[in-house]
Length: 143
Image 1: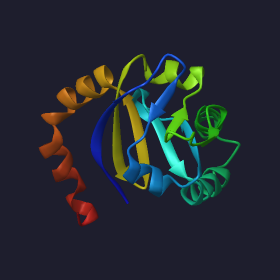
Image 2: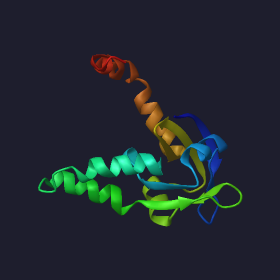
Image 3: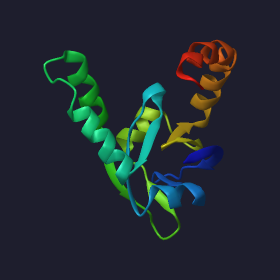
């Protein structure tokens, strides 16, 4: 399980250091793709395969299913670590997430999310006030 929040910088070549705890959980090879809320999602191979199966089961006759599947898979790339424990984030994914220098890397259960620091701070500030309301809505899920 991934959890925690870390700050790192991305270099001019698009290389980002991921915390050692997360590197271990992601494995030697993992998948990064466009995430929701203008961030990136990183999945270990086994989680990616499960997600892929669920997305493949969506009805391709539904426009929303096709759109989401295109969004998710067209941005996906398989990644490996360099000798310094960094990952090279492709330009299209850096652009999607607005990543220029400072990044926030968070653990979210079965995935790692990578945010630009500015977008993370904006998202958190906007969401912080509604966490109580969200929790009330989720009470039906026995959380």
